[in-house]
Amino acid sequence: MNISAFAKKLGLLIASLVLVVGSFFMSATSASADTVTVKMGSDGGQLVFDPKVVTIKVGDTVKWLNNKAFPHNIVFDGHEELSHKKLAQKPKAELESTFNEAGEFSYYCSPHRGAGMQGKVVVQ
Ligand SMILES: [Cu+2]
Image (cartoon, rainbow, N blue to C red; front, side, top):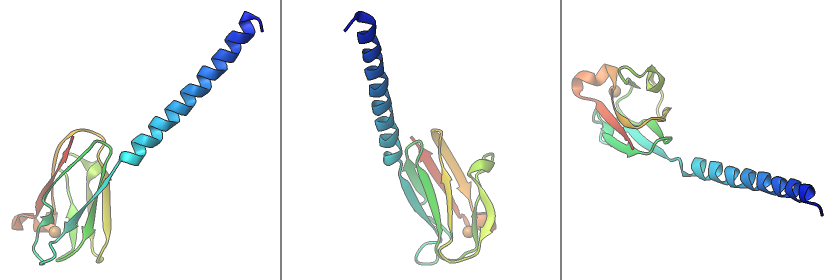
């Protein structure tokens, strides 16, 4: 085998290695993204998000489950992309937002804001 054929083979080997390693990391990243569930309305029927504060990682998803005392909605002031302003009317309806940046994101339920129905998502 001359040098250039060897270099070509080596190049191919490296290219496929990069592909394999790259796809491994991509699948590892998506596999580690979690979904955390927050109940809208406690089991006891209180106008709260349960749990009120959740801590997640960048890329994780929060799923809000219509539990009790609905309708509810999710409003993040200044973050339309995270909000679900349309009222969830049906029992067990689910709303989801994925958080792709770190920070603290406070939200509330607009019909129950006065009753203190608010929560926070801490993204680390
Ligand atoms: Cu509400």
